[in-house]
Length: 252
Image 1: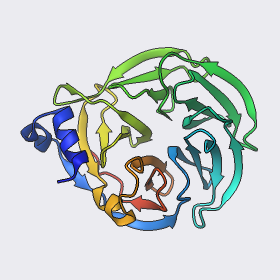
Image 2 (image 1 turned 180 degrees about the vertical axis):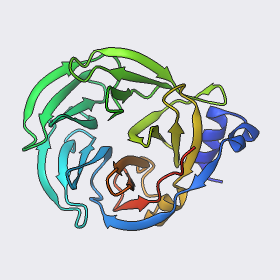
Image 3 (image 1 turned 90 degrees about the vertical axis):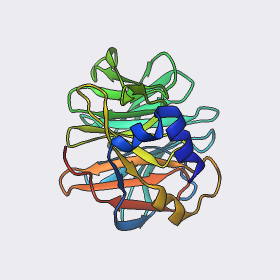
Image 4 (image 1 turned 180 degrees about the horizontal axis):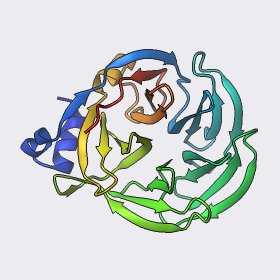
């Protein structure tokens, strides 16, 4: 049993409780190349391309990427020493986070031009959207819901597994009315009910992690993108050489 799974059991709930929440191994549909120097923090699909944000000072970028080749089509740099974090599209723009600088930006989807900046308390980890609000993770068990126009906080949602808070919520994606979230330093993606914050299932990507090789301890699964039109779900990890298309989770 991998250390990450042991960490999950200790952090979230006793083994019997975790077993009560359905766990589905990720089923690979197809693989694509991924930049092995991309320390993935955010990922989304838009207009036929992947958009990816990366972290680490001096290695933080926001990129438009061709899926088939992994080639970077456009890129903008987050200058060192800032550590880039999650991104989300909203009405022709990209909203981005930084890790501990309490600053984010709006960028144009076309050309990745910086448009404005905004500020928030605490850390920034990831972003997604339910079509009405932006949803932000900050490394805690709470998700923040933000007004997309003002970026002011509307409310928070505490994520729990059988009543126990789930910490280290990382990269996020809205998929068929659920919030999918990588759990940092584990091989599990949580399927979260946005109505109450309950984890209703786990997606186990440990086989994908083994396939690319464990490598550095920071090279953990992170990055989820959803192509709603073609119902394709993409996942990758920090510094992984492969991006995987996996079968989407079945409905509740």
